[in-house]
Length: 342
Image (cartoon, rainbow, N blue to C red; front, side, top):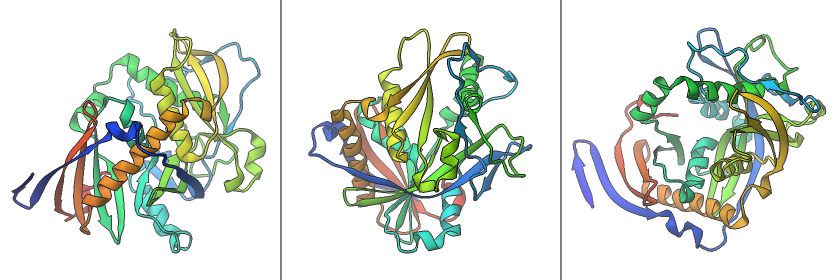
């Protein structure tokens, strides 16, 4: 179905992800590490890009800790976030590393959060919205945050705000950074990101993702592409273990960054950590579900590529999590970068 309004065109084109669970085998090749960058939050609460490893941390677990208070330093007047904004930073890395990407073949550019949302869609009943722009033959995918999501963040209740802070603070409490440059020294909010290249089906992806920390201080002496990283995650008590939804997300994020170990912490009701263990990423979810996630990603990329055919146009995709269908897109002239959300 086709309708037009002004310079916009709405085309209804259906993609059904329910069949992602039954399609033939599909593999994800990679990720291959290409590079890295660091982000930190300055005193004006702005994200600052550093083309170095200054935010790289290593795991520093105390043997048999009695208790870790993850709420220490909490300010109830501050609204906390999981990680610093990555707006435009992958594009900046690409521009500054032309020699690395010059002979690299890729169709899509995006961050791992976008890929993760797509992958877990067959088993999650949530909606997502993406924008896609084709520039010089490459399709940039970005998540669109709805007004409702922004209002939810702005109006977050204190309990949820504490949980958000604890998720960030846990990373700082069980890791150390011996690499601080002058620019990042003393900043609590800093993050280290990797840049990767992966292949799935006929698609090749240049993507960036958060790298929690390396598994020991000794890893810091190795070349970047040989370092062993781990992913730090928590679940909330009084549950005895994490939920299936946690496993889905952890597996997807770990797979997209080439991480094979999750450091799992149980957060008690008083926001203390008394139990930390290690999980093998391959054992988080069954092989059938792993395959479904990879198939879903390939199907959506097929869908996007079939629609995003014109250069310098902005296409918006909406996915309905309940019926597992993507039903349309909006196309408009790309008159400025302000309409693209990274």
